[in-house]
Figure 1: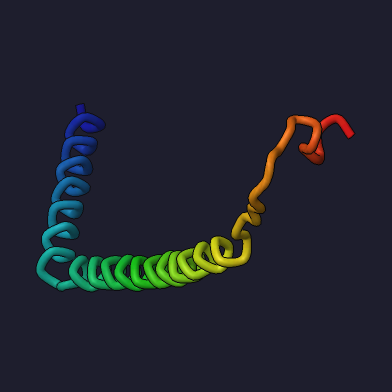
Figure 2: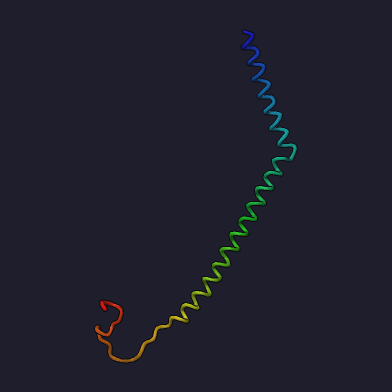
Length: 90
């Protein structure tokens, strides 16, 4: 019987300490400080990823027009036959 009473008192003490600890964390501002650090880190990561993607998109945009300007097809007027094709079955 004494073991049961001791266990009940110990359990009540542990639950009370946990409740006091949670209330202390809420009112001390520690949770707000941790949340601020996490949100600040996420914002910095989002900005860095946006800049990387933006720079890649700008480079790809100008590379597209460079590729289109450099690879313009040469077409000469004339009569073509299927045998004049190069690169296939040579």
